[in-house]
Image 1 (cartoon, helix red, strand yellow):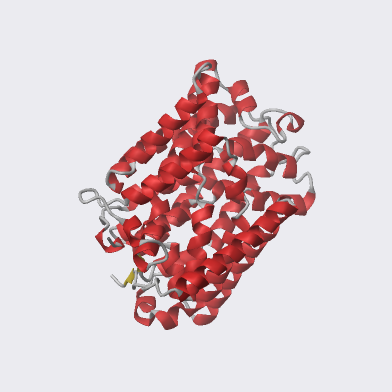
Image 2 (tube, helix red, strand yellow):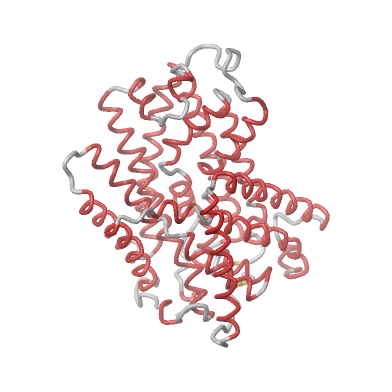
Length: 442
């Protein structure tokens, strides 16, 4: 089967719901407190700046997605810009990086059990995983309609936190002591750290093969969804840092502030719609896009082609979905900490993104006609400068992520990168890889 057979039925509405659901994760419930510890009440400004960083590092995606349809998402981007062997290295790292569905599932279960004491942890986790993986067997547009409904509930929960909280913010937010508590360095560190909360809209890039108009819709949704979430987050951060004394909320999640500003019924709505909703939408969105680059990689021979089988009616990669389902429930059954595994390979992924970012300067030569028609067309000098900015932002992310990792995990990154290179070289040399053109000019 091939990515050419995917249903092309996703428009701006569906993409926006998927992007918002992916970006707004349960991380916002915890990360704001750490941001407050790093920069005080200026955490709201740091949150806004983090969205700027995210858009800057997304420049290569914006440029290339405005030129051609990439049926294999980032995998096709890697192949087009950097060659076959690099595409093999990328997809091997991608496979390990995207095992986080077990993390989302277990986090959902922990919040659920806090609301329903006595529920069986294993049973709830298996039911949640089975429901969302089962949902994604149906057409992607159907999944997107469910996603949009969950995103509405999620936004209402965060909206309640803002509406009830803003009137209770203490006067003199920007003038009282407590802004930029650790200087410019702390503020910039907080803004870089907050990209964990605002990053994620780029996931729609993987769905290019299922979009109606990817060259216009993907850049628009990537930028607009990131800015929308950043604005919402900035208000959430203002409430989190402005109601209670800083020392009471620094390093804490939003639950304490929510208990202060909300009635008990509204607090439960916030926890259910906010925490559970964020995890549900992130899990659902991830399952929807995670298989698409792998589907093209199977078609190209990096993995057995039979794994890319599509459901004859729904045109969804049911075997790949099933494999990820198994890879999700095994850690749950065995109690393996997947959070450490998935977070440990972030440095490798950012390094790959740096390489494709630099290579994006070749776009006008690779696709001259498409580049001339792109709404983001600019001069070669401007393109080189903007790709350079994106590369620098990615380098900053590599630095801060590396600083947060222990020596064993850094060594694990090196090991994974080495294994990915070895796998790509051996698989390519075996003759099994027959790369297909997986981009289209329409």
